[in-house]
Length: 192
Image 1 (cartoon, one colour):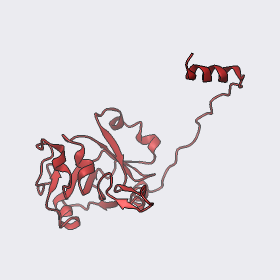
Image 2 (cartoon, helix red, strand yellow):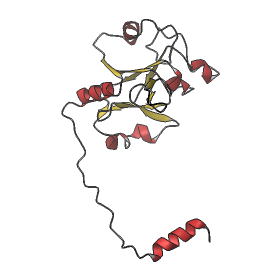
Image 3 (tube, one colour):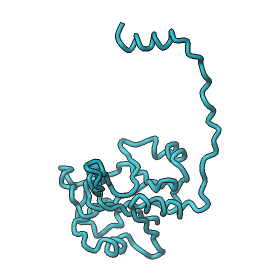
Image 4 (cartoon, one colour):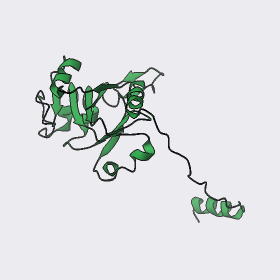
């Protein structure tokens, strides 16, 4: 008998009373203004939300928000200012330190400002290696909570995906806050 079996046998012999599982009859949180809550929560996480105006283009936003960006990686056809096609890059390390990555997100979550990104480019390194990341989502693609998010079909059928909310940050070492340690230093979510 191994140690795991001994522990389980000991627990079973203890005669602990069987307790019913708790019922999951809670009412999910709802927000009166889902978009405004998403913007506030994203900004609380250190990200920036931009609402696209009619007639505004992604190239115009890039020029306005990231005027210093020289290496711009994107596969979105409307981003004509892209200088790097991440699908044509052989070595994902070439996407590290790209000034700006512009990618498509599926939807956002109001309760925490997170955006679901399903990998639709060759190398996911762009999501984490770019200095700044711009995620474009439809303005009406917002859900209230993570409970709603995890049952959406986009989260069920993908090779790789992640929720991203704001820039990468950590205070692991000497409790000094560092941005960009594990991902982009800046995240902008474009609601169009």
